Length: 249
Image (cartoon, rainbow, N blue to C red; front, side, top):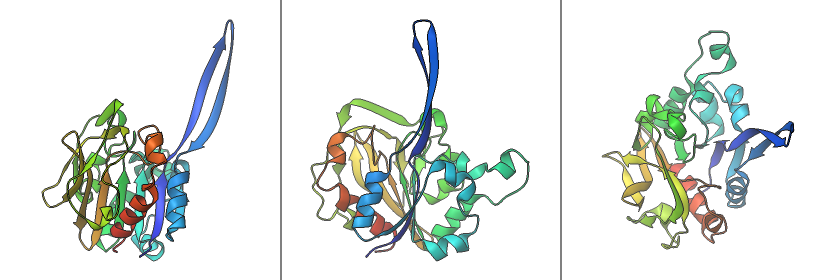
């Protein structure tokens, strides 16, 4: 079964200052990290739209009806809560707008799927700036998030292990590649932990209303997603099966 998927996040701007002796200059750039994920989902037959972070601030829908009409699954990856909470009308003009994280919650409650992939701006994230633990998605996701920096940086590499059989992991090699870090969270009592790393949940799935949810603690791309993971034979089948299950397969 394939799904209609909206992937949000996995993009960033950079601004750097270079000094050479007494001279200095600045450079800027724009990068995206979702290319491989988008490609493998598309090749598996999923219908995929991509919304980078800077587009989501103003472009993410405010109406659950729009989401339900277009999509079966929303994937949030390194897309901070503030991007949904603080559009220009709210942050600059002081006007009221619908809480789009509550809209996502209602989308799931009505039968949609939600997957959050780990990163510096996922879950609680770097210095707590992901900030999802203090939003309506705290009730929707299948995990209990920390209220402070939740990163477990692991430069030595950590290898997650499956701990339960599930359709998401069917046919996927039990010997996973290494990762260079992940977001720490706890599984809710009514959720199912499918993988663990260092005693922490790594992949958790659950339900909310009529919909399904999943939390993947690490990244779909570097730096946490290692070169070994990116080149892994089961990279494509894992993500396709996870998205399909979240979408109701």
